[in-house]
Amino acid sequence: MRFKGITASPMVVFIFAIYTPLNIYGQVKYGKEEVGGILTRVSEKLNSIQTVSYEYNRNTFYSGENYRHSFSTHVYIDFTASNNNAGYRFQTANKKDFSCYNGVQYFSLQRDKRIIDIQQKPDAELFESLSALYNSYISLRNILPLIIRDNSIRKNITDTTIDNKDFYLLQVNLNNHYFTNLGGKAAFTPEYIGDKNKPYEIIMDKTSMLPYQYISKFKDKPADFIEARFTDVDTNPNAPEALSWFYSTYTSVYSLAGPKKMLITKDEIPENWVLPVYSPEKTDSVSLYQYRGKIVMLDFWIKSCGPCLASFAHLNKLQQKFGTEKFQLLSINTEDKKEDIEFFYKKHKPVYKMLFNGEALVDSYGIPAFPAIIILNRAGKIIYVGDNGFDQVAIEKVIKKNL
Image (cartoon, rainbow, N blue to C red):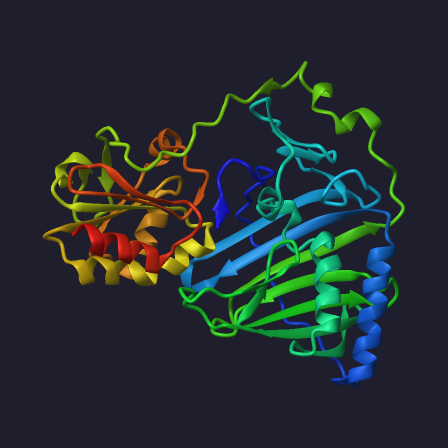
């Protein structure tokens, strides 16, 4: 799931940092006890850190979807916080954004718009959605103990070198499970269509015994990966200024963001709207009300959302399964360029309508995350709202019940 508007407003830079294979020398493979010892030392070192700062660089590449994305920010984490459920506080900063969690409040500054967004007592779901915390030192503090104590996780360590420096390369394979953004272990749902044998790599500095790189891979798509790299690591950094932890410090320069619109709910009847339809042959548009008398499914997506891309394989099947006489699927992109829509149109050859320019519609519906699914009955009343991923079983159940 990709959240809208509550992340650290990551600086999107489509300058792709090429991920090159590691130079593994000698293929020195460590025995089971040695692997356990190395991981224990790295885990203990991570958990001994009270404060840390580093430059965080994450690169994502989905070859089949023509998606390349790079994100960079400076991160400061204080693990001594004991007055909050998270057990830490943090600040992140790049040229575009600043974000801070002080143990009670989370706030972010959009430097260009001079807007400050504040959330009181944020929950774990928010932290899972923050770009700067994906696959971070916070994640690895949680992941390594899981790997160490779970004998069902296949793991091995070899030596590797990067820029003439020695590292350990840990290779891990999970079966039917994956690591969450903050380092939990979760089971794949029955609807997940990818390979459920999930490989990871963690590269650890032999000198500092700290993680240098964390790579999430895909067994069924070996060219794809998500790679996080930690450089300029300082385990005794200068602390940020005391007042920088409070949003009131910035209110003389930044204006408070307006209240967020609540997510549209069941039993509402949305107003009519008109959006352009992508077609290589002609310019066309459709309106919501022209499908009155049919079950209408609205699928909101953006190309930087992994679950959105995964759901494409099911959309054609849905339209074909229920036909067009009583059911119409409208896929609505909310922020990407027409050229991006063209790529997905050519690849997936949709038998449904693929709409774009849906940003205003997303705002009016209060949609916080992608993919989001809204289903309307024949009278135009909302009968299903799903903003927590693509739940094919639930979606088909609602459609069948109301046909």
